[in-house]
Length: 212
Image 1 (spheres, helix red, strand yellow):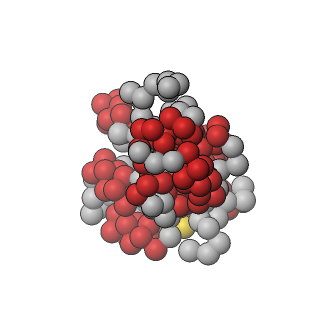
Image 2: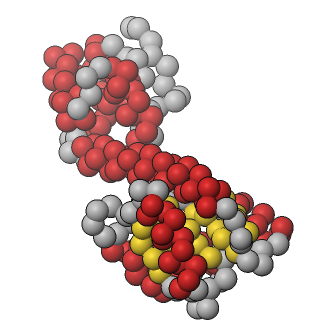
């Protein structure tokens, strides 16, 4: 969907869909509406939303089961459940599975708007972080085997001469590899490089830098 959809609304009752769409559109959100689980999953595969407002009772799929499918198709996207007949065990299960809110009909427009505002902001941050991670992994994949060997030693605090001793290469060669690693990963400082190593899970926790 273009522009980027803020929220997908899923309810088999057309009057509910239209009412929720009107409320959220008036608030400035870009809204996509669906009447079934199947239609929602098709929409998700075409364009990931920042959040989903989901009726827990749909004709073709139980909402809690659909929640699990969404976590595969659309990881970390916040889900707000709505229901006219929810109970405490159901709401607890939904929240344990990652739902951010569980609203019982009828609910005030402001209650829905506040929940969606929070969910959309969370979804935007999550997607931004995931996109950044994809870029970082792509850059890491460009490192040569030797650069990948140098990388964890550098971020563990080894001086160039110690890295060279560890890997059996010259200090000059270590400097060249270190510089290449920083360029390829777009790191402008050692601190930034360390953060990248943590995110990539390549930091060697067991390594303690020592001088020889």
